[in-house]
Length: 187
Image (cartoon, rainbow, N blue to C red; front, top):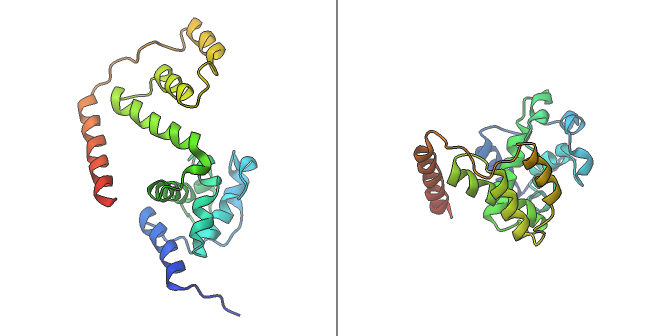
């Protein structure tokens, strides 16, 4: 018996394929992406099964799973795929869609970290560890969480109070503004 997808279910894999610029129909569930993933042990749905959810048009399940937020985007999965499917980009696309649709409740702290990271990079042109973690810990109601580690890093000169200046900061901020304007148009 042949399984067919209705139009709505067919639209989801097409949308993901367009977002990553690649057709994911070639995935035959070999599991090499999952076998190579350094954080697969923490995922409730392994990467190859997330790809299968997308192929089957099971949008709700794919966007609700924690796996897309746990993916470190290290691209080990992508480099191991015998069909050259960019699994890491699929995870990125799923995060983007989940974010756009307000489906970030499952991983509030991860979403917060992503937002703060982009704010810090947009302001300073690079990561400022002290500001990023300080603000993150304050907003997650855990202000002293990394205090001892911070003290240790600071005493060894590994944590600076300020970030060194960055060349091209003006250009970087313009890129951020263009991306934000583009996303506002899509919403």
